[in-house]
Length: 213
Length: 183
Image (cartoon, rainbow over all chains, first blue to last red; front, side, top):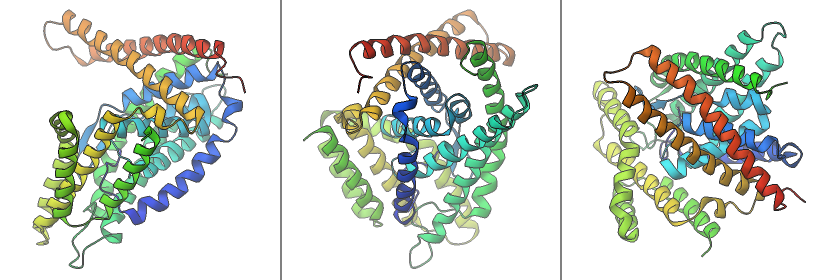
């Protein structure tokens, strides 16, 4: 799902960095309170897991790529703030070490996947039934993929509108929302289902290990 | 120059590159990066080309079809977007080959610590995954079905998490014993 480098106009990614910086400051507030010798190993495990899952990238028609995200797992275990920070770190490492995603796309990817995706999952986890939490967790993991996909599709789709040559040809991403939204959303509905199944397996595992209370 | 200075220089270069819309300037930038990369230039170029291959091919082919149908095809756009993406990815790989990312993020001790631990965990995880794959391959003479592969995925996930948990706990305890968590 990540947007690679070079497809987002500076008039979009620079304000996005401002917005993301605010979100990173908000997320980092109180990190000293949360990060201790018990939390850090879990955070490292899940960040590394999300990182590894994100290595498998599938090209999708219409101009982007898809893969399992792991953001639902991060949000479920650590909450929105740590999930957002950890996923931002995953995105940074992917951009710097693997050329996946990119530094110009980092704020958009982080806000869409790390913040919106994690928030969707966290809300579903908060509203889960104590008797049968599985549906809420599955829906949360599904939404944690589908909502960021929609946002990213819209961000890509506005690029030819906000940045074009005098003759109307695009300067960055070339396809408008009517092409890119269905091209991204249709495969991500399937990816969302796979993510939900994986998240349920990890949830069960985390419960067995006493990672969830 | 420190790793942080290289990182800041890289960020400035990224903004400049994304403000350039002439393929010739981007091609010159690419030439300069290849020139200054040193002996690792061809490895970095190959790695960069490989990493952008799928996405850029998809965009390029999609643009050929859509712009062709709308009679708005501009070859200069394809040159522009492919040069820009390749240059940005080359810059990123060049930077990561030149600096230690964790050192560059040392302005925040939490971020630097988390980066170090995550990269370490990823190495542990990669080794486990490759071991699993090798063992799975050696046990299956013909292509395994979905059921076998699903079992492999579940087993891999459990072992990865368990192993990483132990490794991370060890690292965390080692760092605590050295006073990392003390204010």
